[in-house]
Length: 251
Length: 298
Image 1 (cartoon, rainbow over the protein chains, first blue to last red):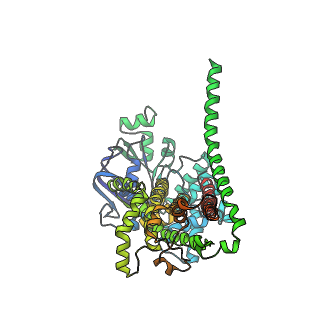
Image 2: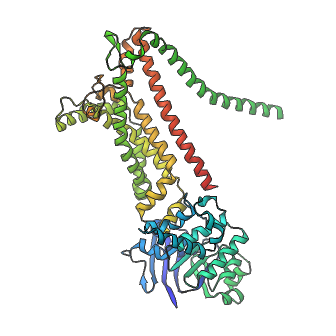
Image 3: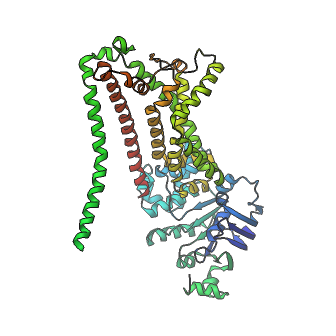
């Protein structure tokens, strides 16, 4: 089933850099959709359109529609804060807040006005388990999150997003700073998470793209070149440019 | 060839070292000079009459309490005005204003900071004090409150400039993290950006207050200069005299080496100690915050 429908989306930043050109694609529910391609291809821009984080950057012009469950989220009248609670995002660099692990996870909920201690504690356990880090931190939830390793921090940041029970999770190079073991744990968590969420991932390497993708979209300088099932794209791409990139001939 | 190069290195290193040490040397020299000129006070005036509330130097009453409270009440008033206004402006410039607005506001505020305080004093005498006298129905417009208002105006540019730099230095990732969690603009400012910039913001406040305590010209012009003991906030609306204004006004007319002369230097020492304490508190707070920030970022 399609969760998101992107229709003729174009976007240009004020400084003329990374932009999207007439991108149309449908993103399936309960699957990992991977956006890959060389830097400056528009992957981050597309992710940032989906939770309207681009509102806060200098955008010169944009057109087209993004429908989530059939509703255009680029509508200027839309409640952006509510949208961002439905569409969570994990960044390349984990940014744990200078709080305990527990408070980091409940932060978003508390800002949304949740005060019930029991509900918050439930959310902490549930989301830390989903992010595959519960066993590592369950005995020290009151320690500062900064004391954790980079890989653990990133999973706490993932848990922080999951605590809000979003429908869609955007991940922008979530493992670019992590060691292979932590990367493996995050990827395994994603495979588990896709059962109940829609996941869109911009991986930092082509290998990660191939490992995780149910569906994959290849972006090159703002254009969507090819979009298909992951297996097909990474074994027998239709486009020459996709093949060149996958084979490591450029990028 | 190589030898002359290393010789040059040696000279340059030593010159830089010397200029670094000179800062310490000058502070020490100032302190010793103040100490030398003020210590005789303790022999000439006993402590109970020194910390007394009558300042009539001509009749040998050297109670400095009115001057001390005068300085404190004006500084307190200035801080109450300048801190919210300054922080508000800094937050607006850094977080809310569109880019073109920011590019106009920041230089304007910094221009305001470069305004000579005598000019502000003029404005105080000619505009602010008559306005306050009529508007608040006071016997005179030259009051502690007038001084606070103007000192607040002097402290604001310092606070805005330093605090805005601190807010601007907060990594964009912090804000985006909060926005992506569904925080509103205000929640992001209040619960993420401001705490992350805390050390810089505290420095800004301390620098602003430091400027207000040390300011002389403006307060001398607009506070009425009556050495009255100011104990309650009600005294905000009566004339007061500050330590700085006393030194500036009386130093020129005092006989060199007299008791009065020594007491003025003693006031100088008190001022010196106050600004030293403010600085120590500021740097210890900043130091602690900085250590925490390093832990976060490492």
